[in-house]
Length: 131
Length: 164
Figure 1 (tube, each protein chain N blue to C red):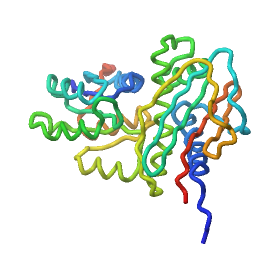
Figure 2: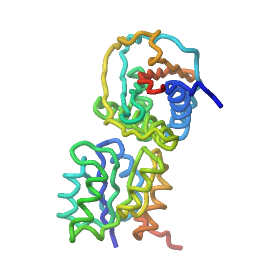
Figure 3: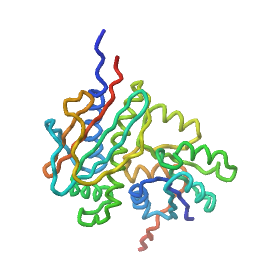
Figure 4: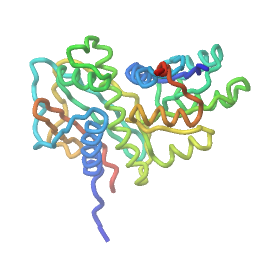
């Protein structure tokens, strides 16, 4: 069954790269360029997973995470934080907010897929060969 | 006991150097080598500058200068495209911004883990010929040059030294 993954990141480059990483997987990719937009997309679509950038204009990752946790309809959606900053204080704050996992940029496609796969089931779109 | 703590700019220079080489190698497959300090090269093709600052116990700005051609190569590597396939300036700007964010993010993380709490600014991008207004003799200003066989990258540091 296809899963919905929402990427909230102000970098179109990152959104393209994530799209490329998931191209052979059975999933519907949603996008938003900041937290405010991301909350609207999440409310309309109820994604199975959110990939959330830490540093964004308008509404950053921490504020978005706080808003997600405060919304009874959205709080159960697992979130993986994407961040260029891997400092211990950031990791502690993410853990306190209930982020399921985090990835420090740059990350390889296969690492992203593996970490997402730990949280939600991912299936390939490749047709099995028959003999 | 060391009575003269290391100037902040020396720490940032070392961290930025490591971060640039590691990020270019791991993220882009480009092996940059450090060069001798020097002036920012004038490039007839024009330059793109990605800038990210950090604010808090440590304050400064890191600027990454690349030629427009090198910036397209960098963008292509991020997207799995050749530089000729990279046509849109907004995507190149975005790539340079993201690259700057990643590099300075690593610097910031190390500063924080070393006890200097700070937050990153959002990346900004400028295009065109650039001439630094900073005095090269300013102790808070430093240039770091990198190169591979075809391209050059210059990192400019503008750091406020908080050491007493």
